[in-house]
Length: 287
Image (cartoon, rainbow, N blue to C red; front, side, top):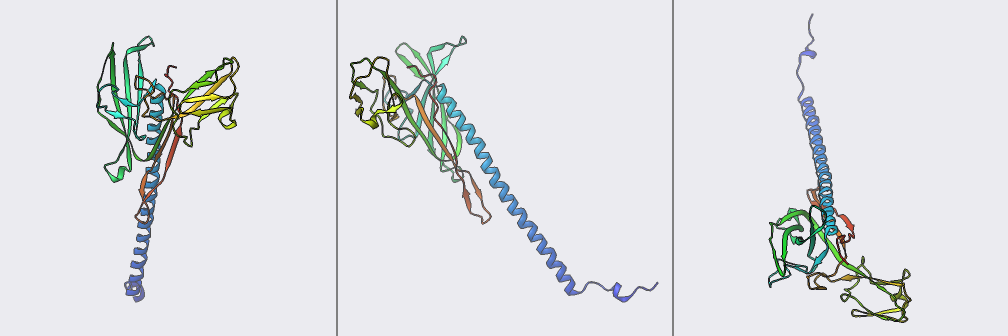
């Protein structure tokens, strides 16, 4: 059977150009879609990873606070050159008791856990990183010694950290006493920690029934037997409240703000804040 000339002829130049154009356009669209998908995946991955790592770090800090009996203003508390100082809220120093096999406290051993917020050395890890250091401590009579283990960076891409320290004191009425003394001078209020002097659940500082001057609380009228005056206030972490280096804190308001980064579709670096907060108590605190 004779095949027609029309069926035997090749593609025309126009048809070839159209085919190439369609193929190129399809390839570009596919590549663009793949690039957008890759960047979206990168964003989701970075944010998810930071949330996971951030939660892990945050939970570890909260657990360390709960295991502690003291928050220190510096460490070592002896000598002239401390390794860590609770200055400018960039460092939290916790002392944790060591328990023996019978679940009683070993009075000769403690573990010091120090957290420091320091500037990142790499832009991709910044602006701050969180460093954790363990220092086993031994007490023998009046002699104290400690070993500083290598510090570890446990979190990166931190934008800021708040760890405001607070304490609470309770005074009991005896029908005659009108003046009570706080352990330390209260630091300025923060959004999370307000100075309160509660009697019967009401803040008597606001009603004028109690006044404060320095460390001194003065009542207009003495409380009856069995009535409690509950005082909570913000503590400056560098304060030395007791001779063991404690600043007297019983709780630490903790707020971590992480800032994961990713490259957007327009090739610029984007960030997003992840915030975690809590106010753990020093559970091993001995009143």
